[in-house]
Amino acid sequence: AQKVTQAQTEISVVEKEDVTLDCVYETRDTTYYLFWYKQPPSGELVFLIRRNSFDEQNEISGRYSWNFQKSTSSFNFTITASQVVDSAVYFCALSVRPLEPGNQFYFGTGTSLTVIP
Amino acid sequence: DADVTQTPRNRITKTGKRIMLECSQTKGHDRMYWYRQDPGLGLRLIYYSFDVKDINKGEISDGYSVSRQAQAKFSLSLESAIPNQTALYFCATRGAAGGTDTQYFGPGTRLTVL
Image 1 (cartoon, rainbow over the protein chains, first blue to last red):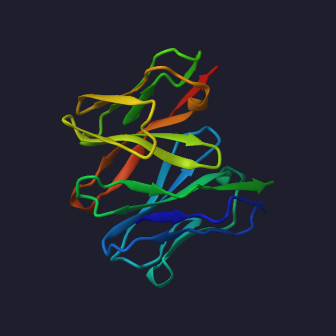
Image 2 (spheres, rainbow over the protein chains, first blue to last red):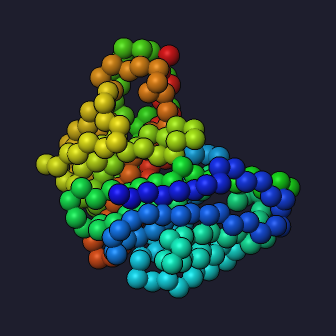
């Protein structure tokens, strides 16, 4: 069975602080994808990143970075020097064997981040 | 223009009414999905479709039905709306070929059932 856990329900930080959002996943498949989505207060879901199970290199995009560790089944998301515009709900998701019939995405319950000015 | 559109964006209705939420996409993806989002519960899958002849129930399909009218269109119906179907509904499309597996979401429909 597949599962994504985001243990942090809500996080508040002061602007310019760094913050890490945790994501732990469960799957027995060796081929899978991991994702992060952002949901700002306006409500839409914005795709941030996709990482496949064969690529454990960390990725950095501006103030955002992602740390993928298969040994701990984690795919954590760090925002450096947080800004008020980063305030949103962030979802982690998992997809396994994407080309097979019946394949689904599995979402965590989300982490609500509030950046205080 | 947005790749995935949903209509209406907001809807208030009464218990027992039939409601249809529509989704259109211009991404050319075969796979389409309907989710609902409730506070603290994240996204839950209602139905999904891998092509126009393929419809599958998700985690919470009771009380809902869908229609895949064309590759680009996927509608969600509530035959007799009830208050606990008040939620934010998202349509999504997905491209899975060529290692590009990603879901892209519409802007959401906020449904309130009184």
